[in-house]
Length: 333
Image (cartoon, rainbow, N blue to C red; front, side, top):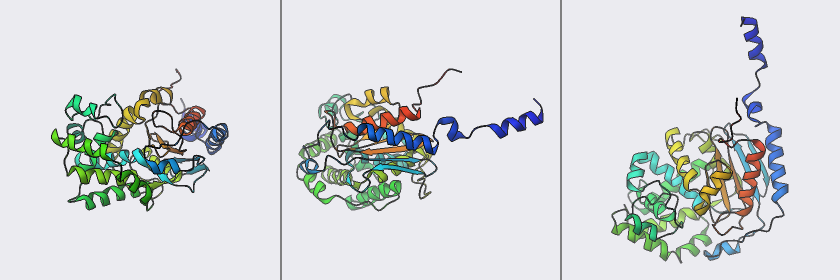
């Protein structure tokens, strides 16, 4: 090939965005189409085992897609905030990996999916506190106990700051949700004490459970969650603030656990259909991460039987399909 031919080829090479279909027009069209297709859905119902969640407006529906270079696309309700709930487990896990290393988390908590309910006590008994996974309640409470901090106040400050840095915002505690959960978290307290009995709780069990309950009650909107997901998509650097929150290595390990255990009992079905690491919360949010490309978040409180937002799942599925970003879908050369 001649130098002139090489130069011509270079000049006509399409941009990365055009090659992957992630142009501004394509992203906006995908979001608009998904929003319009799902906005009238009435499937699912709010979580009510946490009494305050039953009172959340079921019509909240917001979408935020944030690219790894910091472009923000939104649709719907971006003002309403809901409690982050189990999505918080992702960011506390990332903090523990960053502070102590990936092997430490594998040794002290475990990373295999339990195959049982997110708040299962049987899972602890079967494994004697091992392989309990940081994205279900036992492993998440254990992760809180491992976060750096001399006392519960310091641990909570560390966790809240981590969430703030991922979101690029000063996030606040939802007081009514925290009070509601704290008054009815006996099962989580029992889980923490059982882990202690097996030597798998690394700080006071009552205080660890309380900090865990607080992190689940952090208030977020769809834009907050979208930026948090995009920070993971961008290798641990917040694409809006440009602050390094965690390392690329920490991000990779975190995404791996999200892929295998992010949507409770439906984690396998989710990965089978969508192909992206994701995490849901019973507050109605779901985040998903397309590594190197974007993070996406959808908030809609009505849940299915597994505890995952019905509308959020469908919306993300539609957008991923429209943008053709399922990493397992490869066209033969």
